[in-house]
Amino acid sequence: MTPQLATHPVGHDAATRHQRASAVAVAALRGHDLTVGERSALLDCYANSDRTFLEIATTHCVDRERLQDLWFDLFLTPSRR
Image (cartoon, rainbow, N blue to C red; front, side, top):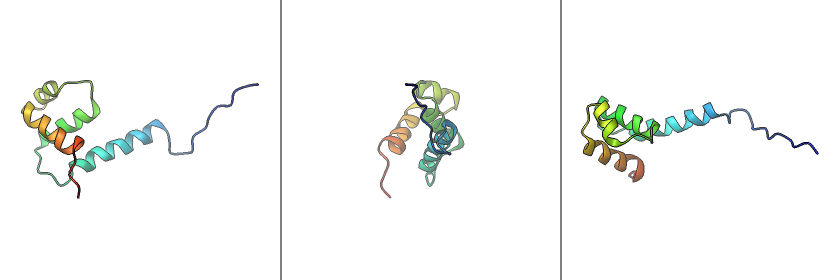
């Protein structure tokens, strides 16, 4: 018996999942008073989970402690609206 390949409905490819994940990250940043560097650093953290806060903060000229606080406040314990 030949195994059948599973087919996914249209719109469930990796690119679409990536776009949805990106939209979630961008939506989490809306409505917060962030500098361009902080916003870029947070998106970098979201996209590159293998890098440390210190590496990303240094790259974007942001304070590591501030970046870490923002990350935990916005992504790990988001406020309810």
